[in-house]
Image 1 (cartoon, helix red, strand yellow):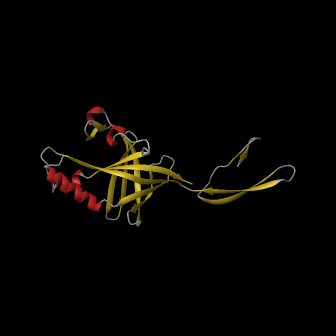
Image 2: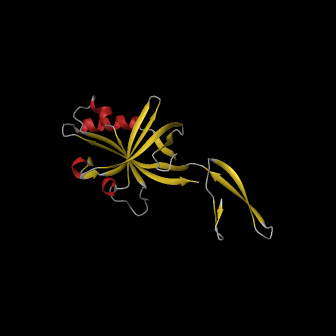
Image 3: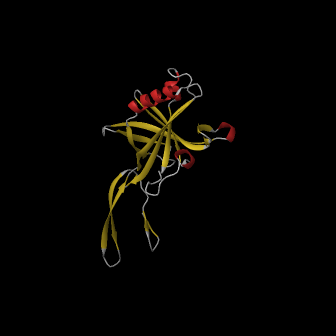
Length: 198
């Protein structure tokens, strides 16, 4: 703890709760309660969009594939707990639509791609810079491309509809490629509202 004459600064040594007693020269005192914990962000999915491309796919193929994806797309919310200063590792609780949760570990990596290596998502929209979030657990693996550069992807919003904080892009191409070999790209786009949990 340091006092520079006008303010007090505290340096955390570990996670947990602490009480700090502050006393002046006149014996006035105040006890400050301090809680040290990891940063947590709750990320609720407010809307989802399915993108399926492939010149060889019929309208019927696309409809069938989209219905298959919707039938297994139960994710409703993510709660990320960051466990280092760089926000590169941590744990995540994943909620489904039945309010059931499972906890996994994740890594977070900032990716910057050149124009020639950018990932084509839909139309003319390409992903140049994003955070690659890899979620892993026993018998579970998921990769999310997290981006703030998404307005051309999700389209125009009405005034009474809030813009999302992030878009989470989930690439399902490899998962369905063996059944739908003519598919070029298969994505779920989650429009996410993020809040810091205090």
